[in-house]
Length: 148
Image (cartoon, rainbow, N blue to C red; front, side, top):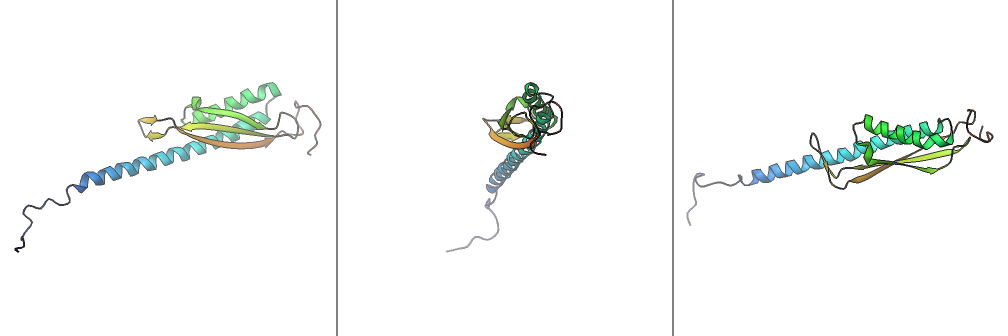
């Protein structure tokens, strides 16, 4: 048996280049999507905190929830997100002195998000909750201060 000498006829390794590019693109896409979910979590956390603050500082019970929803949507828009993908729920408490009010903000982040292009897919629901106590010394809420 005779061994070939030199590299004539060798093409090994070239077929790996497209596979390497594919792996690189898939990795960048994965990192981008993970960051989109992390960014959405930061956004809903800030929106829940702002909504709870506005809820407990509202002048009366009738205005508390609509004002909290406006505050949450404003925070989401300020961070460059679509406010129509967000929802707000009051989980517990009420608008009365010393009541712990817990609000939950949910946002549906796109399944596939690409910078400068946008997102596609049904999405991943990201949720955050925040609670605040209605101030016992302020004017407006009914009842007596039992927590101070």
